[in-house]
Amino acid sequence: MRVLVAEDEPALAGLIAEGLRRDALAVDVALSGDEAIERLAVNRYAVVVLDRDLPGVHGDEVCRRIVAGLSTGRVLMLTAAVSKQDLIGGLSLGADDYLAKPFDFDELLARVRALGRRPAEVISPVLRHGDLELDVPRHQAVRGGRYLALSKKEFAVLEALLGARGSVVSAESLLESAWDENTDPFTNAVRITISRLRAKLGDPPLIETVPGVGYRVRDGLAAAPGCA
Image 1 (cartoon, rainbow, N blue to C red):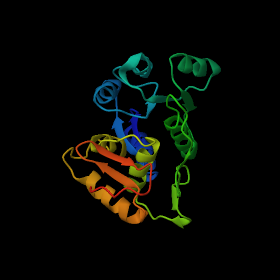
Image 2 (tube, one colour; image 1 turned 180 degrees about the vertical axis):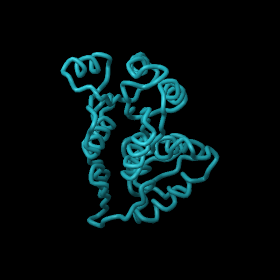
Image 3 (cartoon, rainbow, N blue to C red; image 1 turned 90 degrees about the vertical axis):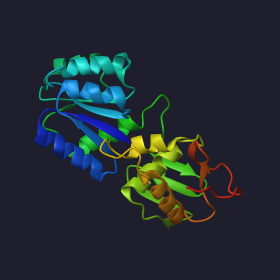
Image 4 (cartoon, rainbow, N blue to C red; image 1 turned 90 degrees about the horizontal axis):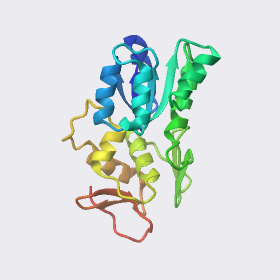
C-alpha cells in the first residue's frame, strides 16, 4: 500500500514516514501543499496523511482537490487544533478521518491501515486464498499451517495480489503500490520479488504470470507455474 505524508515539519514527516515504512508501507513525503498536489497528480495513493496547516496550497484546499477527483486516496487529516468545530470542519471538507496533534503513532498506523482497507468495497484485514492466509495487521503469512518468513516487499506484493482477487496486477502497479517514488521505474525489483515469493510459498504454485500483462493468484491449483 502506498501512502503520501503531507506534513510541513520535516522531522515529524520523517518520523511518520519511517514508522510507516517499518510496517511495510511505501511512503512518499511532501513538505508543502504545492508539493502534495504535484505528487497526487502523478502517483496513486491509497491513503494521504494530510497536515491541515500546510504552507503554499493550504491543507484544506488539498483535501478539496482530492475529494474533487485529484486522487482516489483516503484522507487522514492531521491538525494541532482539537476543538469540536475543527473536527467538524475537517470532516466536512471530505476528510475520511481526523487525528489531533500530538498523537500516538500506533493509533496513526491503525487509522492508516483501516483507511487503506476501505475502497469502494470493504476488504477484510485477513486475506485468504486456498490454504494461504495473510493477516495484514499482524504482518503474518501462513500457508498450509506453515508460517512464511516474508520480507516487507514480499508481503506488500502478496497483499496486492490477494487484494486483486484473481484479477491481473501489472508489474507497474505492483511497483507503484509497494515501492516509493525513489525507485527506478526500469528496475527488475518486481520480478526478483515475485521469484523469491514463489520460492517461499512453495507448492502447489500460487502466483501465475500472464505474459505481457502482469501477475495474478491462480484460481485452481493444477495449472503450471508461470515464469517471472
